[in-house]
Image (cartoon, rainbow, N blue to C red; front, side, top):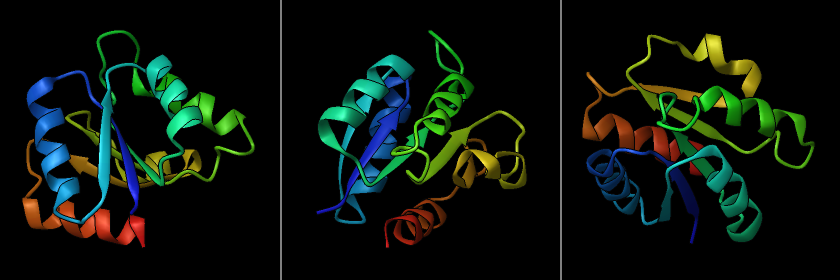
Length: 119
């Protein structure tokens, strides 16, 4: 079974994202900060990461920079899910495979992106 780590500090969004992940027959876990994400990545070895860019403790950019600096983590597929006006082109150098806009995303599109990233 594939594993997806969700880095989201809003409980309602975290629950919704877990629901979408379960729809792809993958397992998920949620953490609320970049520090917790790094610990969970080391322990749980996820196949992909869903990252909110606006976290209470730090921005998602801190985690993206950290992952990029580790050779063994630089290839971890990342899906950014945020309200920040960014594009996939803006994030490509960080290993971001897709950007989902929280204000416009639809369930079918989220599941399609997850399926593509996890395949």
